[in-house]
Length: 588
Image (tube, rainbow, N blue to C red):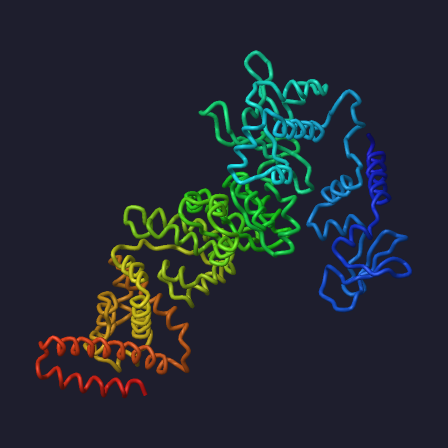
């Protein structure tokens, strides 16, 4: 076919679609339209406005907004509102108009295109599920929480535990063996004969973004117990696993409306979420995520909540996939469910509100990754590899993705927040030093108790002020600071800073691998940045004063305890009186 003939055929098809569907019907599904002389008017779907300026014209089958100048025809409207390419929008509208798009005229001897063959297979699987042979499959799906209405809603079918039931059915439809093979519905044995790919399985049709069946997934429920639990169609000219997401055809409008997508792994996870009202959910057809899938999701919303079961969420391959999504423009948030639970299992035991709570408690990808590595980072045997894995992920991201997590990254890299921010913005490569134990472990363990954590944060802040400010060091004696601190790490660090040159100490710590003290200073910098103060002197008074009050309270309680037990010496009574007076002064 010449180029001229091809373009004429495409133009004829486009006009046929336009003539079959009124643009006002399509736009009216999204915009409340009011009749005018030439057509209709309504509030523009492409920008915020209070006075309608979006016009739909009957005579030209087009639209124009006098507010934002958006303009086009039925194809451009569907492309913009649905996030589709032109071909996808055309196919969607053609299906709605009942116009079949094929590369050639339909073969009178039977289905000829991959689409037609897959549609025939879907009818066969659906009939199997509905008739007597599908009783076991219906019972299985009932145990999984799906009734007949659900089975129809998600086009679920069943493949008999037979070697050639589908092959024979398609042959009866006059479909050649070669095309059955190309459609991924059969395999070939050593003698050249065909046998069904899907046997004894519940069938999940996989559709493209326009709702066209492009492949199948099958869950084993009977037959060969050694066979894979789940199998998918092989890739072919219309199906690529990396370019599709299960249920995206149903979810895309909800993703746009809600401003978020929920990404899960399995068919049943996505189906259960849809049943529970989370219609913005899609499944990745496996844990390996791709740039193409990121592009699909980003058409509709920038934020993506990933919810894999806890056994897989922390695995290297899964984390790498999440970084791919973040790298390609998505704001990835990781949802955690109780250990061993996937969304399908979780929703069987909990109301939808609990899953929404889990979404609200989700954390950014960087934070989730660091948390998943906590155990490895605290184990000398795995610490280096864990750091290497973390750096590999962080290196994929832009500075703006990392800046919100300065506190975590500053503590891990032992770089003060201000310096770290400059490094990130300049694009300088981060190098994560080898962290020796037990210093880092002290930092992490101190978080377990909230009261101790708060005290430790303040002590780290005091050490940071001593490190950076000469006036703070000159105003204090080592013994005065030592007694108000509780952590051995902060006591040792503070005394060293008050008796030695901080710059020389910094070099010494790094040279002997004592990176815990540098991490402590970085942690203290973060604490100080979050304290409202008029200057360094005011900041010192607040932190030192608060720590001294806590020390006074501890000492008062110690003396009172001795007095109750009758073991306090006479001088303790005098000290108690002095401490009470001191507390009044400090609290002013």
